[in-house]
Amino acid sequence: MTQTSMTQATELVEGYRTGALSPVEATQDALNAIEKYDEQVNAFVLVDAEGALAAAKESEARWRAGTPLGPGDGVPTSIKDALWTIGWPTMRGSTMIDPAGPWDQDAPSVARLRETGAVILGKTTTPEYSWKGVTDSYTYGATGNPWDATKTSGGSSGGSATAVGLGMGAWSLGTDGGGSVRIPAAFTGTVALKPTYGLIPLFPPSAFGTLSHAGPMTRTVRDAAALLDVVSGFDPRDWSAMPTPATSFLHGIDDGVAGLRIAFSADLGFVNNDPEVEALVRTAVGVLADAGAVVTEVDPGFTDPIDAFNVLWWSGAAKVLSAYDVDDRVDPGLRRVAELGAAYSASDFLDATNIRMELGTLMGKFHEQYDVLITPTLPITAFPVGQDVPDGSASPDWTDWTPYTYAFNLTQQPALSVPCGFTKSGLPAGLQVVAARHADALTLRVGHTYQAATDWHHRTPTLEAQ
Image (cartoon, rainbow, N blue to C red; front, side, top):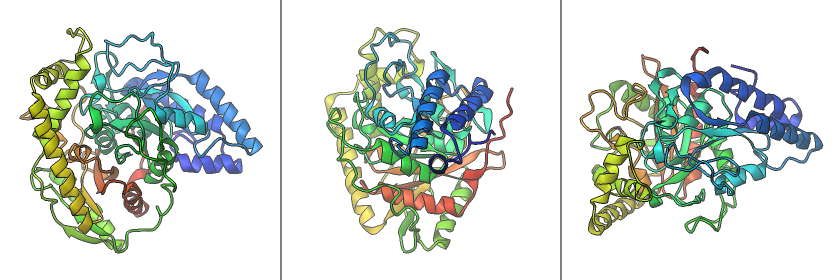
């Protein structure tokens, strides 16, 4: 890797502050990584090298003058191609969107990044309308994994995870409607947070409704907290946006876990894990116990809410496609689930919503007894690129192999994925930390405590340039 391409964003900013590092050099290093690896992994759909270097030069001048715009000034950044960007098309992996635009608004989180002076390198790949747990589309093709380009990066924010994992920018913004930042984080050995719903405002609203969150994607938990500081905050365009936080998410991140009540569920009572993945997660929980946490192995007590989630998600897919004359240019899996979604009744939707509310109540009570819940992020490691599901899957649905993620979109709780080791085949596994709604800082504190005691996040992919 190049000099700064794998440097944490918070370390870059400190280097800019002292003059030891340069935003221009950091941006050029990120662009070099894109040039070196992207042909293999297809992480980006748009790269603006000229614009990024110009922005980096402006950032460097501000740092030299002692007038940075904010805590992200000069940090090389990418944006998932599901979030609006002024002047750049947001194609969402679809052939149905007119690239002519107009593209005259930023999504709220993108606007916050510009306000802090972040250097936006370009936009990252996503499946069509972010509908599934891997990243491929007719428009842009499939995205590979930093550890093995023949394996999937996961999805739907797979381009962002692969970009971060290979040093193509220090951090990225993704979206998560059923696991879409956490799934690729687990598969790529990176970090991602699905925050409490409304903490990062969204505009335009998602067709998948209040399941969909935006979230930071980074290599470390500290960077995730720093990025969350930048992109969270009230925006009037989002009717459900929360007030701007009064305290930095970096505050208290080093406080450790001594005395915290951690509930560990190895399988939620209904999941079959790859034995290597489960062993890695159990070892990780032991690290937290050694750090002073009070760990109890217990299931939260709910059955798999997959049917309720699918009603809500497939209905969203039907809504997405209802605006278009659908033909064979549309992902066949998306067409299939949209047809299922179109057949649901209002009563079906309300029944699913009722299950969602009951699950939220159950988890609210659960967190009165336990500060956080820890699970695997996924029960498996990455499978071959270009497939929606692993070999031998009994279902064509991506929700069949992501049982730990979508439940917490239903409940709108913060959920963090942290890398917790590698299988014998060299593929990463992820640990998921879930807390009560609005306890985002606690998920970050637990995740950071684990990272401070381990070195998985310091390991760099061995992908060879071709």
